[in-house]
Length: 278
Image 1: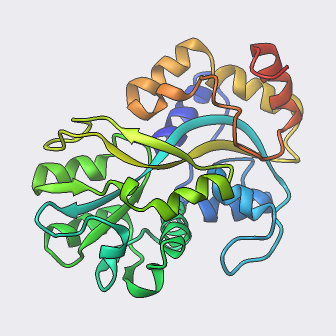
Image 2: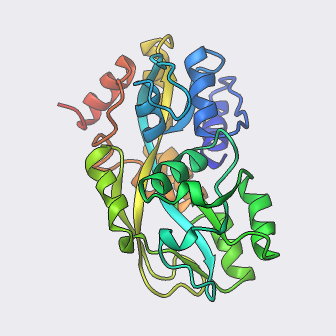
């Protein structure tokens, strides 16, 4: 909710009525946004990409009313285990209890996608619970691993590192999931720097998706253009970055790469003026 609340605060300064609504996560947001119950939403590019093609797991409806308007942050996969657990690869999760995120969340969708590729998904005990509940279960040894799919640094991982001796799994050991960067355009390799979290002194190799700002296709070009002018002004980017370190890439050369979603015409106008689209 960092980003949703920040955007709400930015627009309220101009007396624009906007409400940040808590949902179950990315998949839930896609359904709400596509149906027109919300004009704007934050989704993971991978979920929106598959939703637009009728490829969501167990849901073949084609969600074709969602348009890309802006990049927010990279979301690396961060799998937390106890340092002494002996879990080093995704294959080591077989037979283990894994909190994958709530039903309808981008985390649960991501976990299923990667763990299915690693042929592990069917062999874990899945806990569909949010990060807060999962952290309590992890601290009390009721689960063996906690799957976090979010910007880094992440508050759940920070708290886990404060309360326990943890490791983040280095996914470079799981070479088969790196084929996903070829199969799906929305993934990239990602390195979490040393000391991003307490006690983790080495860099961690993983995969990352992207959290993006999207709009319903019926929102007017002028409304989208105006919203982007406000959110991506130097002053407001600085404000959002002060709230969360993952916002460092909100404006970058890579922000238009590998999204593969239809671009809203209002966003096309804005990003052309900014020089990010020719």
